[in-house]
Length: 63
Image (cartoon, rainbow, N blue to C red; front, side, top):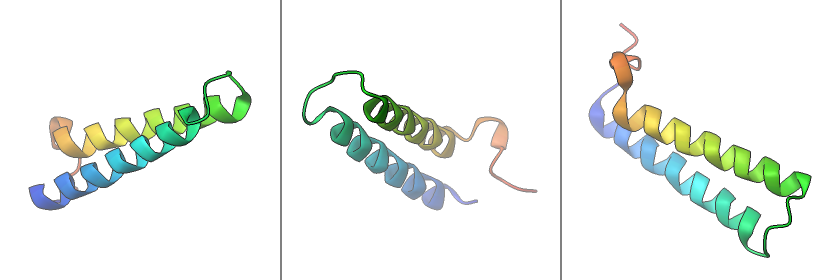
C-alpha cells in the first residue's frame, strides 16, 4: 500500500474517531454503557489511524 493511500486512510479514521468522541461527550459524561462503547470505538479508530500512519514493521505492504 503506497504512502499517500495510507495517510489518507489515517486521516479518515482519525476523523471517525473525533466524531465518535464528540458524539459520546457532547451532552456530558455519565459513564453510561452507550457512552463507554462509543469511547471504545473512538479509541479503536485512533488505533487504526496510528496503524495506517506509522505502518510498524511494514505490516501493510502485503508482499
